[in-house]
Amino acid sequence: MAYSEDHIVLAAEYALGTLDADERAQVETMMSVDKDFTAMVHAWEQKLGVLNQMVGSVEPRAEVWEKIKTATGLSAAQAPLALPDTPPPPPPATPEVAEPPVVADAFNVIRLSRQARRWRNVATLTSAIAAALVAMIAVGVYQPDLLPDGIRPKPRTQVVEVKIPAAPTPSAQYVAVLQKDGGSPAFILTVDGATKNFTVRRVGAQPEPGKSYELWIVSDKLQRPRSLGVIGGKDFTARPVLSAYDPEVVNQATFAVTLEPEGGSPTGVATGPIVYTGKLVEAVPPAAAAPSPAR
Image (cartoon, rainbow, N blue to C red; front, side, top):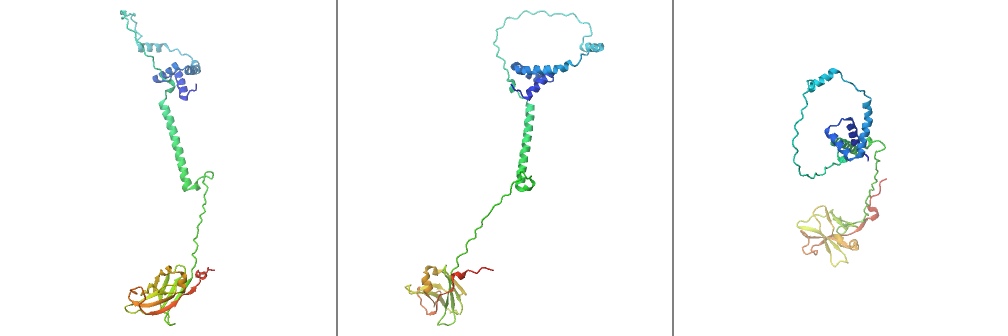
């Protein structure tokens, strides 16, 4: 049977006689139940007995023996040996059944102090290794240049593809000069061909007290003129209402401006006189709406 280092040391110290009473009792218990352990103890006694034989016997001097006798009280004449009276034999007692002795398993006896020291050393070594790993990981994340080339992480290159949205398709621009009988422009109407949003710019029209200018679309494909809203008092008025009409109707229609009561026609039908008219013409074609690239 294989024995641990503690068992071997116990056997050697028992042979040397350096164990205390508890440890000697432990070894003797193990010897009583394990023949192999007993053989190991005898082997140590034979190995160490050679050392005892190498030391010669020394006879103490006579004065030393006298000191020993004086110390033990044997220097005076000894009194004759008196034997005590023999007491009568006790009556026979009822025999009791003795319980079998409980023999501890010698191999489960653990030297607590040595085992505690050993586990403490293992725990210290494990903590040191864990701290070193944490330090290496932190250095690899924040300052990888400090690590040796063998364990330095390789830099990762990420390619990011940035998609530039396509430029919107340029749309055609339409312009109508709203005037009276070929006179000076009163308003300029601009229509975006894609969104159908329009802008009316006041040019020569003068405001009329208590009156409002209202813009109308007139087409033979419509049952009657439709109002596009009142032209505001500012220089520019923008409206998105043309998006409800087909492009063909918008491009071929006549745009008229009437003078209505303040706030526009109350009935939805033109009530005032037509003061300015005009038709759309293509001012900027779609291909030319985008700016030319710089050179």
